[in-house]
Length: 395
Image (cartoon, rainbow, N blue to C red):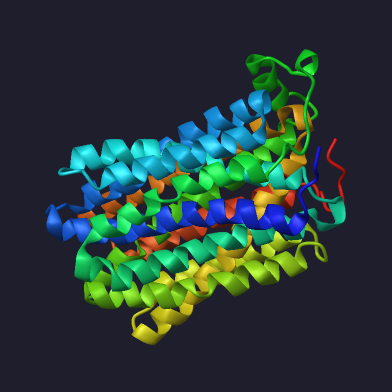
């Protein structure tokens, strides 16, 4: 079988990742636009973010398990098609309920693609390069968010959110390209493939229970805080008194800091190891979240928001490098997918919590303090339960 070069694999899988981020990023701006168009309250705005995370939880679990059964590449293509087509159909939505239902299926595709792509790349590169390559894969997420911010700033105010969302549907064509450009990195003989229940039990068996507990706590903390904060960023800036257009521009400026966050994490992950990069970048995320919540001036908002983007997305890159390294090939997709699925519960709770707390007149300061506390729990999980996996050969 022809071997795909690391550069080509990174580029092909990376653009799939970029399209995922484009969709998630656009959703945060679309929610802010729909508030006015459909007269949404803060609870409904929170539900639009959370319904996507419900789909992502289902998708991460289902497609992670499926990837161990039929292969990483084919599942990657299926998930890309699901969220691309769903994004295109969403432009036909005429009400909150219809849009929310469509976002569930879009979320399922998104949630399945991310852990499957990171697993595929992890299995395809040498141990001494694996962490750096996976973090660089995650850096395409920043590219997607930057594209989303640019589209939101230049397209949505002039042409509306439907035109912006329709563009993401074109990524379906890319799925066909992936089908012929990527080969399976590893295959497990059918006679050696565990059953579904055996895979799930194996993830929590004695050899892997500690790693699984650590990953579940870590994924929940990271996803809860990320989606709770970033899906609300444009809306929080509006609540702080800035116009919708200006808030889009400010989020774009903050988003640019994601790229150096990824690149520094990619450089450090093979020098410091996975644990230290996660601990340091999560600590930076916690401090930035706290100061963002308390920022009063525009300058402080932009600086703390940029630092939040820098550290949080660098931590995400390390998380995706670290997760597949906890399990052997036969259960790697299941283990990574289950951890991601549990984390997506945090993605459901986070945006909803913000909506309900804002309705209850809870301050932005207090809300971001909650996210700071959640991130500290993730730091403790890695520090106390995690093992260093740098250089580990994936069996």
